[in-house]
Image 1 (spheres, rainbow, N blue to C red):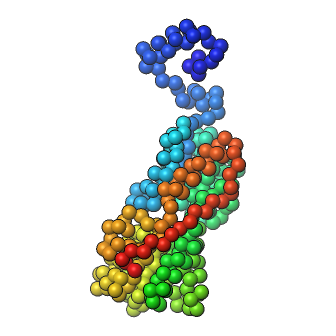
Image 2: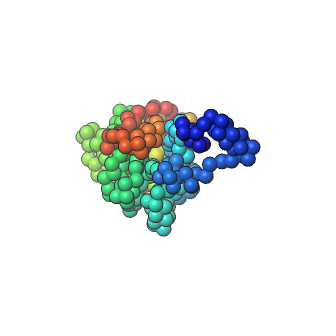
Image 3: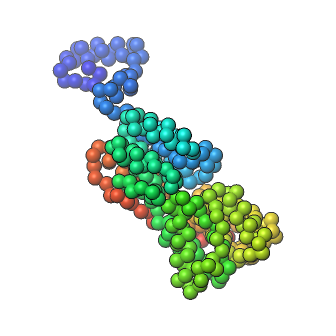
Length: 312
């Protein structure tokens, strides 16, 4: 009757509506899901610990894009994190037991098999970023390799020849892709790839600072740093200043993301813009399409753009 059945008389429907209003009745979602086989819930699983999720502007931006699209739909968003193997087992069991109508996966690492498990169970899924160990049915990514290439090409055009790269995590597709893009530009300039200074990072501010400090402690002073995330670039700039080096006079710095932090550094940070909010919107759109049985492309790659500011 509450669903507007045409088999109910107008008088009976009006009486029921009055009773609903007087009693403050709210339909039981759990009971309804037993009939409809739907939960009206979309899960966003971020394979990172809480400090990364809430400390990195990247995740806030992509969540904003997802939220904008789901706000126009009947679905509620469930956010969960899987930082450990125990977390992954718990979330995998929950999601494959019909607790969500669809799943968005973000920041997948090589050891994470959640995408494959959900696909096997027939749960509609969209991955943000290409997993390194599986081939999910639907992926939304950005042009990481082309973006990194444009960053290093920019530094080379500015006459920098002792370029250091603070690389991203190599167990995520974005990390190797950005490393390869930097190497592409380096080799195309006629330089030997082994002369590109590379230190590891994990996209965090601390790893950028540690990486540049390590280079300087070895006596390898670069004249430019390309950090594979804006937060690592901020850490790199801190290490350079602590060593008495000026940005960009002594060392130019370029990041990757174009997060809000770029406008608050001194000098403002040159970076590679990735359309993170749009990525969230596209992920949500594709998942909503998959959930109603629609066809979607297996991979959607969004473009990046170099944004030149004062740090280079």
